[in-house]
Length: 194
Image 1 (cartoon, one colour):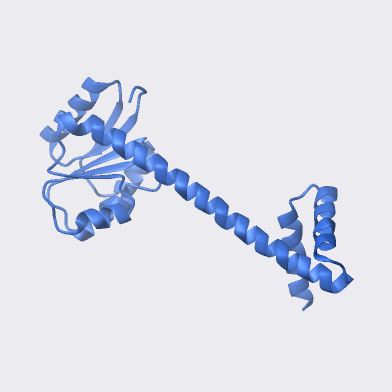
Image 2 (tube, rainbow, N blue to C red):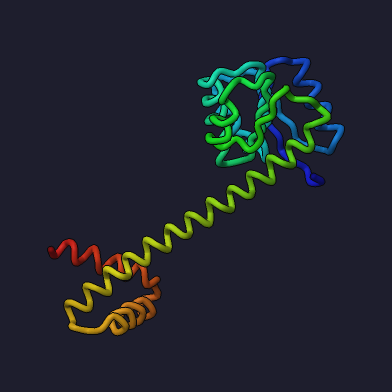
C-alpha cells in the first residue's frame, strides 16, 4: 500500500482511536477521519466517501453488527471489522453483509496494514465479480429480448430467423441504436397492440 488512502475509523474509545490514527499515520500519509459516535453513521461515512472503513467493536450483537455493516456501505468500499471475541456466527453474518475483512481479537496497530491490504484486495475481487455478473445478466436479458423480437418478425413477415435478425440489425444501424434497444421497442409495441 503506497498511495495515500482516505480512511474512516469507527472507534468510540478516544485513546484507542488515537493509537489507531498514530499507527496509520506512521505507516503512510493517509487521510484519516475518526467517528466516535455511531449515530448517523451512514451519513457520516457517505460525507467522507473514504477508500476504506475500519470498525473496531468490543462485543457486538448481531443487530449491532448488521447495523454497522449496512451503515458502512460494504458494497461501496472495503470495510474491515475488528471484534474482541469470536461471538459465535457473527463472522458469517458480517461476511454475508459484505464486510471485506472480519478480524477477531480486536484491532491491533501492527496488524492494520496487512488487514487493510487483504480487505482492499478482497473488495476489488468481489466488485469485479459483481460487475461481471451484472454484465452477464444484462446480456442474457438482451438476448431474450432479441429472440422475442425475432420471433415477432418471423411470424409477422414470414421470414427466417437469420432474416429477422438481419432486419433488426439493419434497423439498429440506421437509427444509431443497439439491436437490443430496437428489439425492446418492437416487443413493447407488440405488447401494446395485443
